[in-house]
Amino acid sequence: MIDRLHYISQSGAECSHLEAIEQVLSAGGKWIQLRVKDQPETEVLNLAKAANDLCKKFASKLIINDFPLVSKVVDAYGTHLGSNDISIIKARLLVGNTKIIGGTANTFADLQKRVAEGANYIGLGPYRFTSTKKNLSPILGLEGYKKIMEQVRNANINIPVIAIGGITPDDLPELLKTGIYGLALSGVLTNKKDADVLIRQLYQEFQNHPFPSLLNPIESC
Image (tube, rainbow, N blue to C red):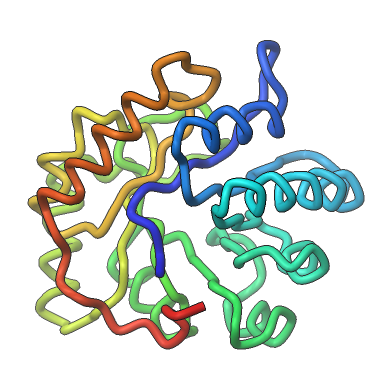
């Protein structure tokens, strides 16, 4: 089952990736994406091993951004691939059919391509400007989400779409109206003392807006 609330890890002067992940897990986070940029694969591997141990401790799931082989080696729940990473088809050959693979999309055409390649979920964005990502794709905004999600429905595409990029909890009610499945947060949860309160509120919001069952070939993993 793909969770409706994704936490994308970040590090800074105040905390490391692992510290941030443990804080979110302690606050009730259930789906963690380890996103490490500008570091060698060996460093990502070490972080991924430790992050996966933390996620298992809290009965949560770990997704590795950009490094499918690392995901396979540490036996993470899956991997997430950006638009400039290897194709989902190639990643599937590396990690096998039992792992979740998510893919980033910025347009409906991107989304169609990811679906055709066999993605299990889509990270659609960015919603607004975010400083956590270099070479940011064109910002979609609420109107962009409305347009793309309408195209998704008209095309009878049945896949979880996660809103990403500069999103705050206040954006959730309007985003849910577009038909998105869930959202990904980073800075608003990183090193925040009230993260547990916020996470409970978000899950309650999702519970108040149940989503129709989705076709997912490895949903039972």
